Image 1: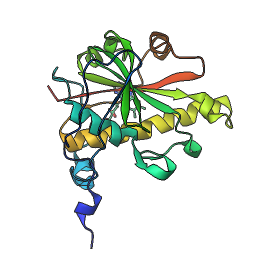
Image 2 (image 1 turned 45 degrees about the horizontal axis):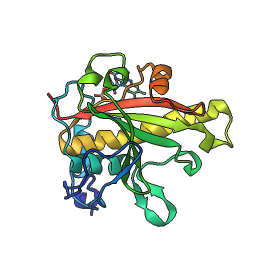
Image 3 (image 1 turned 180 degrees about the vertical axis):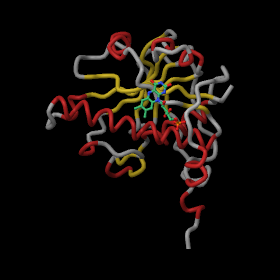
Length: 214
Ligand SMILES: Cc1cc2nc3c(=O)[nH]c(=O)nc-3n(C[C@H](O)[C@H](O)[C@H](O)COP(=O)(O)O)c2cc1C
């Protein structure tokens, strides 16, 4: 018999600590995510939608931690398996997080955040006005150098597919948590890559603002 509880996604907001104000480049470790809880998958699918109005309140550090694990966290530690698939397991997508304070980068293998830059770049994460109003914007960056066996066209195609799979995890987590989110392709990606000071092998694929609905 179909047991909905076995298909639960997301997790309760476990007590995950995020230290404040790390120095540039310094990693802040998040505690291990809890492996249970959240809304049953079928209910989350029923609630999944794009929303473009955000309350300004920042997400709690615990909720951000759970969100990042759901997005692209390690779910099979021995093989660095992730919550989203990627082309030949290349795991080329890095998630940057833009907030009012600055930009951090998620490291799934340590479940930590490293500081990338100071300053609010949310207005550059989409051509519309609303991304700047979200308390956090996820920026999906693909390192094409990790897909060396593919042609450049294939690298770009698969990088966008892989980021979209992560984005759907975020959509489902948001549905489970009652958060608002929308994935964005209408972004000046070259300008954003420049702002992030990305090397030539790395491209922005999508962005995804997230927060409580306004
Ligand atoms: C690849 C892709 C790119 C998207 N880009 C944008 C965008 O730039 N701006 C936007 O407001 N929504 C964007 N969306 C969200 C879609 O507009 C939205 O998914 C669609 O209207 C269906 O609404 P729903 O997600 O609520 O079902 C994008 C969705 C996808 C899959």
